[in-house]
Length: 201
Image (cartoon, rainbow, N blue to C red; front, top):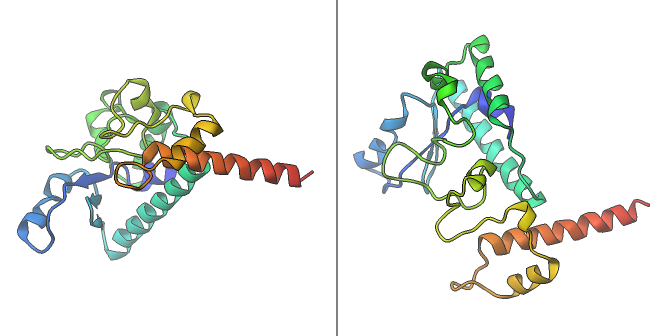
């Protein structure tokens, strides 16, 4: 959703969880180091590396800012993704800036740029479960949006009455989950925007 991420980070992998402190933990990043310089460690944090310490720190700052922007965007409503053509345009700019990208080597015509991402799939048996930021292409193709979590398509947004009912009914663990939170946030955002628009007049 942000050109800066595509240009400066490219594919971001998610390594499987492992207990920290041993070689098994260090080995979780090995499959990714050839193709990316930014790796999310499942249930831990990030690892970045680059040409020098400043470059690695720069990548950490970018991924941190991107995650914050995604969270804020989701709270405001729909996250708008750009399409494969626009992603390809950004990727093709990278060599002009001296930045390599394995997707250019493989050929962009062979990449589903917005649909298949290391950020979601990884290389091994580990597959993170997307719960909030599902690319619209995955919803269109009927692919699962996470284990037991259905993300509503914009045309299927519940009415405020349905939202109030869903929000008042806790999940089995007593906490709101996926669609409950999304609906509640959307309803609150709509009410705030309506109040602000009325106050502006």
